[in-house]
Length: 389
Image: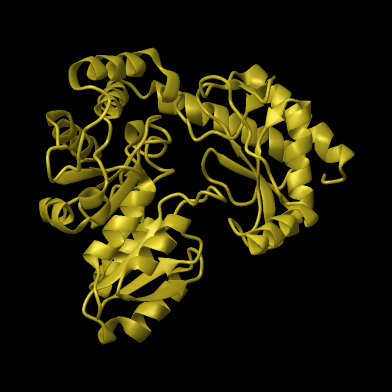
């Protein structure tokens, strides 16, 4: 324990130690955090679904019918009819042949990557892919290579050098990169995959519910239906509940039910969560109002920040980083903003590279323009006071 205590003290000494904030109510645009009302710019609740009355009612009804837990893994007795319905609903929404739901997006990457690759295969991963992809790759027996972020020339170089040495090759990318808000060059990746007989795998955690028609995701955004082998998404961000899924072919679903370890060794999703998710997808099918409002707010917020001189990197989505650089200053900026009424997370190493600290602003469909105006005013004044801007 003395070793861990020393490591924690190092975090405190370098100014990057943090304590967990405590939210005292639902995840809304304004939340009561640590006893104070603040503007929430740190949530992945893009569409405001996590506290929506229709979705809550669906969950309540499911509890009355099914109880609070599934009671087992899906391969024993935990596979309820509502889980099967959820798989079908997502596959239909995504315009894919089949779907299988996991307990979380992280569990998807941990379970799917190791199940679809083996010794003698190669995984090629974007250098800025999510931590869950990195861990999923580590669990695989396949060899791995990394290409420079969204650099198609570098991806082509790796394919040219290594493709003939392996049985299967799997190219993995985030759909939307969670720390910078930029979108993968999916059409170019798919083109290269076809040219070199490789499979494609897209983690669309921050694209699902955000990009494409009614939030159908990055694949829909680029019109690539049927051309991406494995499409991963979360049900805890724009959908507002919990869980993850993989969409693809029917045979992919069949194989994962036999080799996807999180499915085999962890209890199935709560039926109330499944019902809530089904209702969320029904709402997205009915209207584009939620996604339109999200994008209207995001464009407004980003425009105001740019006009004031903030460096928001290369964001193309509602994810809006404000680049700071120094890790300690980033955390101090975040803490000062919280004192002044804006909660926004400070992102530092190891989540991003050293010297690339930033606060990451997450706008939602719930925010009113007045909320965003007040937040921008506080961001600007705080940045000026701290000589960040």
